[in-house]
Amino acid sequence: MANQERAEKVRLVFESFKQLKGSTPDFLKAMFVFISETYEAEYTAEFLETACRLIPEEAPTFRSIADELISRGEARGMCEGLRQGAMLGRADTLMRQLRHRFDSVPAAAEQRIRQADMAHLDAWLDRILEGKTVEEVLADS
Image 1 (cartoon, rainbow, N blue to C red):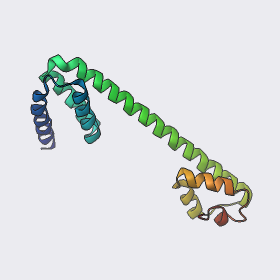
Image 2 (cartoon, rainbow, N blue to C red; image 1 turned 45 degrees about the vertical axis):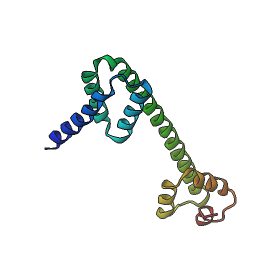
Image 3 (tube, rainbow, N blue to C red; image 1 turned 180 degrees about the vertical axis):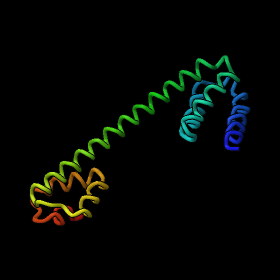
């Protein structure tokens, strides 16, 4: 049933796509951006293939747009991965410094550190030099 519903959704979207013949590349790009941000990746690939089949003269434009969206998504993923890696590194460094300075770190404090955002981690890393206890280092400013 889910596959039939999905096939029907794709068919309905591309019945609309038939109306796009002669549309500007910017409009087609906007449609693909909308589809890629609204639906799962597998839908996007299915939309691309269906669009190329229904409007073959626009296939090069569709493929170019899809390539650009893939590159953009890869770049976003890479940036997010770098950001998460930096946060993990800061959390690991803070945990190491806290253990070195205070011998142990309560589980609740470690959980709080692992869930913290970059701003908190940076503030706590700065505060490790002055804090007298783990709780003082992790106190909200």
